Image (cartoon, rainbow, N blue to C red; front, top):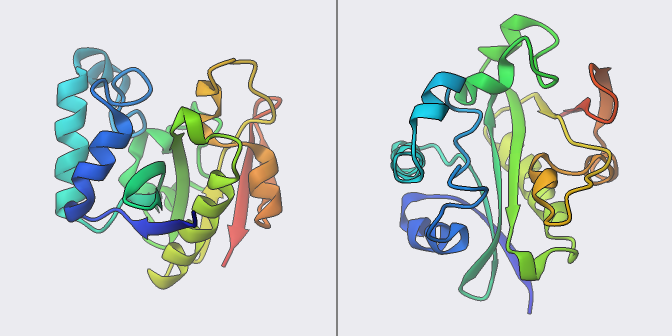
Length: 191
């Protein structure tokens, strides 16, 4: 079956929720990790995180891309303006922008998270998600897309790859622009 990639709009919430499962993928994160400051993350719960991302999806514009096989969502990638994920811009993070003004610029985008259904990993879905995200960014007028993937994940569950693999971004044309921690380059694609 063919994989298709679509922007996550409110009408696709049921598919997104089913993909993430009862606990909300990544231990109840619901892709809110980079949206909340550490104190609020510690005080939050899976239910609150689910409500937060649902409200964000309903507010628009789409905060990412879903991969579908037939009617089933099999993968997800969060992408959008850096300003939409404030913790990703934190100066203490390896993903911090090169210039702080980039954190607020609407044309400076970032790919921050992935989630692919366990049974569908290893099928190249993240490559397709990145390609679809680049198209989404271009259509929205982005001039740059940043990512901060990992070179290696020793996590047997694949959870360590929630930021993506360096190899995937290299194949999509991203180049390293900063290395603040070994194995975690800040990569950039100019559109």
